[in-house]
Length: 223
Length: 370
Ligand SMILES: Nc1ncnc2c1ncn2[C@@H]1O[C@H](COP(=O)(O)OP(=O)(O)O)[C@@H](O)[C@H]1O
Ligand SMILES: [Mg+2]
Image (cartoon, rainbow over all chains, first blue to last red; front, side):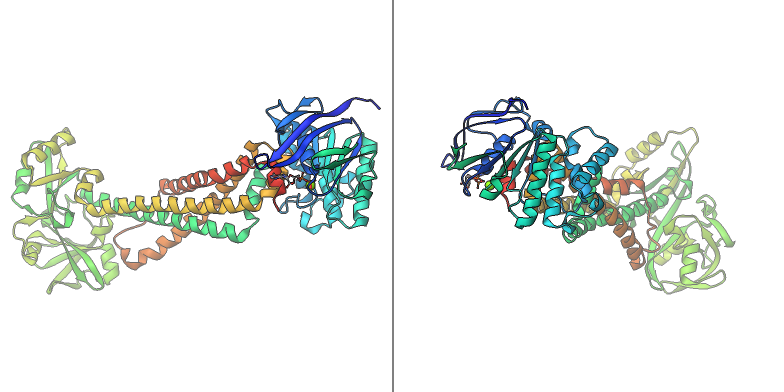
């Protein structure tokens, strides 16, 4: 495996409410391509904010952040970066309820110039990968929590991202289903060599990763 | 699935809200359509009267608010006939009487020998003779009253014998009767008066020249009417309907627009988190804007279809309520295109603000929204 850094963060700061809330207070972090890292810390410590910075959902106030070769603080068009390099998985309510499972997986592909046929083919491959091909015509509301998260994994993989960002992906699942989802993410990381960064406040969940980073009050306290 | 089908599906997620918004806009569209059909009907029946008997123009008293109040001295008939460029003239006195259950039964007075000039063709019987208490009845009027040739019809207390049935194709004429001009003048106590004069010009004469000459010679007395636009000066009724129709359209745009803004803002608000997710998977602001604006257009397009259907039904229901015999609905493509155009316009302006707001949502904040 190569030793190239896919993420480099220097003195990154992010505050909210006119600087009164320091969500990130000088983060320094390097993550290598193909690593499986978990970010742990109590609620409100800044984990989601850090993940959102890596995924270019928001801009920092200060510091440097380079992801997959892009200098995010200097880039204007973050949408393209997101759609090509990042796959997000969230805790809950993240599928569109009125369209089918298959159509949900196709959603990120609109930004790539796929034909309808190619989109469908790719989405079906991904659903086969998460073993939900038989339920592709269902609406997300007809699926169990674990199945919905598997759809979310398929959708995150839609555009072949180099990094998967998961924010408490098992947070709303029972522990057995949660374990199954974690196994799936782990095998994805192992087989596809995709960089996986997972936010959690659960020690057991975090322990599955190769490396654990602990965040407290917007600072990394253990790396 | 194509982006377009997603846009078409989305408005039907909240069926009740969409149905309410569609109804709100559809009522406005229906009003526009129904008014358009009736106004066009009114215009076309007025136009038919104007060109009655293949005449080139009509002369009425100047500065009257309604054609019905026009009064011209009969001697002007020969004056006009002698004007250069005029081939022939027909003088008509128009009166309305309540007959059977029709309060506006048209009775037209014309010289018996001018019937052929007026292109009033008989389909049964013969024409009336002067001063013999005879009349001819229009086909529609005959059907409505059940009166046939040889029957008598009482007008203003006087009995008239029907000698023939005619058909001209003009709704107002076919719904009334013709009698001798002298007899109607007597009945109406309007000796030597006419309501209007229909004129035909010589083949080589210029219509503008002829009408200008008449307008200049008889300023403040007579006025020529060549088209509906000229008639607008006389027919304030038609003008009122036109103004009302525009006012209602404007009202429909405003009310419909507010409905769309409201519906789409609610929809965007409810889907805040979803919009955050869409941004997280890489959707551009432009695509989000296009989606919400597209949904708004779908909403108003559905409303246009529903509204047009409602408008057509409304016309069918309205005609029997007193418009029969006066107005035949005229269905013009323009009416429907105008309705669809207004609906799309409402969709665009009403959808723009919610769409802009959605596209501008900060993804991190949208994702924090529960
Ligand atoms: N968009 C925002 N507006 C205001 N405050 C925010 C926003 N995002 C995060 N915060 C605040 O920043 C701090 C860190 O939040 P977050 O990164 O979500 O923590 P965690 O994911 O570790 O629970 C919290 O105090 C939170 O309230
Ligand atoms: Mg969080």
